[in-house]
Amino acid sequence: MKKIPIHITILPFLLLFSCKKTSTPNEYLNKFGIEKAEYQSDKKILSDLTKSRRDSLRKSSATPEGKTLEVYIDTIFYNPNDKIVFLSITKKENQYAMNDAGISYSGECYIGIKNAESKTIKILDRLKYSSTSDKIDGFNRVKKSNRNIYLTEMEFIDNRFNINDNRFWTSKVWNKK
Image (cartoon, rainbow, N blue to C red; front, side, top):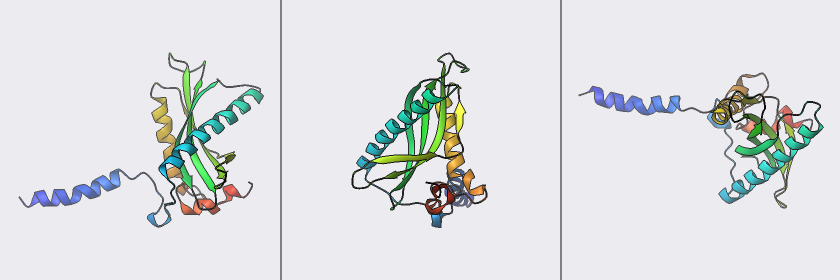
């Protein structure tokens, strides 16, 4: 009977460690938030901007990739100085995809500026790392991979911070903007 309380005590700790989604130390976690309605509005704006940006790049490319079908904004982080960073997943046509639908997914991370007064957003740049998949469950694979790269792995690359880290906002990715 004494073993039951021990298992119950250990279970929350096991769950906590198995569900960890970031390597960012707690004291550096970005906790800056906005209203849910504004967040949803920003997701729509960013989706449209990202789609437009990708279509523009596709048209000017010597080897254009397939047409962008949909852009899903996975996560947006904000800071008090109007900077934003977001993860996106693009669904696109791909004649070489290894699935019957001819669809592939790509995940990227972008940085931008949001004018708080006018509510306008400008995408400044796409960060270096991305993920792709043309598997049937490609959307989920890309989502998981993108989150892993930008919320876990960046901490382990020299002089870089995860995008949910307050130190990210003053990191060198903003220097050339």
